[in-house]
Image (cartoon, rainbow, N blue to C red; front, top):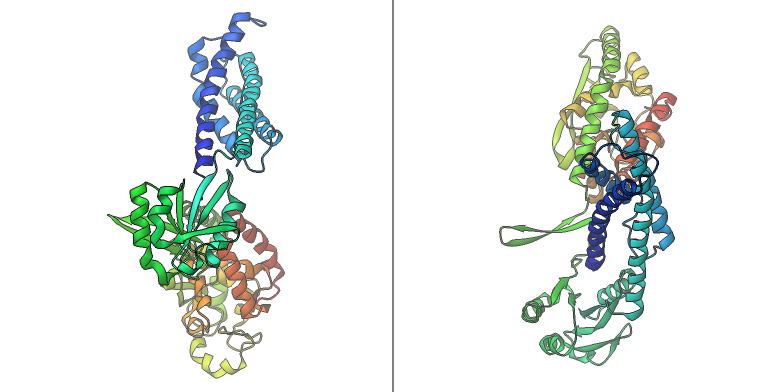
Amino acid sequence: MFEERSEQVGRVMTLLDMGLTVAVFLFSYWLRDYFEIFVEVEGGLFSHVALLPLILALLGASLSYFGAYRRLRGSTIFSYAWSVFRAVVASSILVVALLFVLKIEYVNREVLLIFAVLELLTLITLRAGTVWYFRRSLCKGENYLKVLIIGTGQRAVNLSRTLRRRSEWGIEIVGHLDPDATRVGTQVDGFPVLGTVNDIASVLKDHVIDEVILAIPRSLIQDAELIAYECEVEGVKLRWMADVFDLKVARMQLVELGKIPLLTLEPVAQDEWKLMAKRVFDLILTLGSMPIVLPIIGVIALAIKLDSPGPVFFRQDRVGLKKRRFQMIKFRSMIVNAEEKMKEIEHLNEAEGPIFKMKNDPRITRVGKVIRKASLDELPQLFNVIKGEMSLVGPRPMSLRDVDLFDKGIQRKRFSVKPGVTCIWQISGRSNLPFAKWLELDLQYIENWSLLLDFKILFKTIPAVLKGSGAV
């Protein structure tokens, strides 16, 4: 927020990087050709220029990856130089490697060497100039954003402090306006209360103000219409603190439905592209494991059939994403009428909270004890993963009985993501964990989810399952 100037500088720097790269490459070709270093340049200008799109793509990706476009605050010329050095070296090695693999001989290697050296110096010089401009602007205060805050309460104070602490180019709080006339003339965290909300027109007229920010409670929202009108008249940008509700949200979005603006509050914000990548990852890993998994499934199915009468698979309605029901598939590890016998032994429950666990459950068959110990009864859930009802990693899908016994609303937050075959609980004690800790780990996963975290959980699940501790 309030970093449009930084974004502009970043865009300009990117365009300059690309433009200067083209100029430096052409100059390197001319320099090598003009002085005829070593031998005459192989190939012509066109054959070298054809390489530019590849160089630009690799260099741009490398600069971004190594942090050459990081924010100016906290960055030094040395840190930028180190980022540029790594980016130029990495992209140059990749280009040369591709030329070698593809056996492209008409591109002169000396041209590439001269280009790499000159490019390094050019990009470092560009960033040194940008850092100098940034620091000069801060010293002179010429780019300070002048802000008027509507409100004098704690939210306004927090906003003022956050703005000054987080702003990259500097922010000047011009003052505050408040609906209460008795506050006029006082100060809020060192800044004057210039008038009431009704004085907005004269304040905007008499002061240099870039932006107005509303930091008033819901009860005073009716005053916002006058403020919005006067800001529109003066051509001043108006912002609104969206935390009018005392909620912890992961992401806020303003979207337009036709001409209707909708403010979206998302308690669990997940990037759609990352979710797609997670789905692709699930499918690749699941389908790729089938040559190994299917024979194991066949052996277990045969053992179950020989051990006790009844079907091989056990299907049960579970609560999944957004509380949609689906049939979860497991190997049957209990006697056929296990569900009916639940009421007879429910008083022997050894688990805390709305889940049922019992170490010596009399309903478990002989084969069931073995496959539950190694979590092999969960293997058929891979078919749920393929169908898209579950993911490899996620909170365990709860039965309807368990969900009905939830005593806290926050417990249902786990339904904001797809349930999984394994999760943090699986590598942290499994059934030995109390329900409260289990839920805490599920919520921790939801709030900190990433593809890297999924990979780590899957990697650690293997030894946890082989060890068999905590399995019931």
